[in-house]
Image (tube, rainbow, N blue to C red):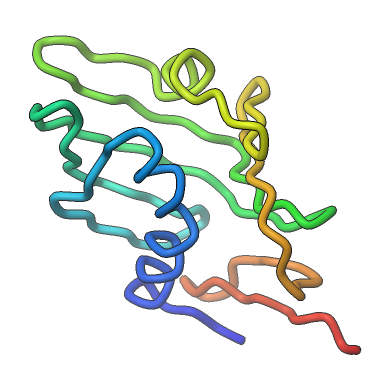
Length: 129
């Protein structure tokens, strides 16, 4: 199954909704595009403040976890420009979400075998049962 930018945006917003809701974050606007990685430029609302996010990453799926790997980017909050990984490590504390050096994994059981980027689309191979 190949997903374009628009379809990927819908899926990511749906999959991350529980985390966003837990931390009272709402998406103001977001732009997602795929080249050799997934790129997100977004504006979110946190504690009545606009937070700008500019991040790139790869997606993997293993052991019933969606893994965002090779995460790079910045978060702009008020007058601060912060490293996105430092913020994730300090900010998110959930049982089903683990943050590592340059990646984070979110437990979300799905029938997915693999995720790859092919021709500016996300290729998701489903498990055959």
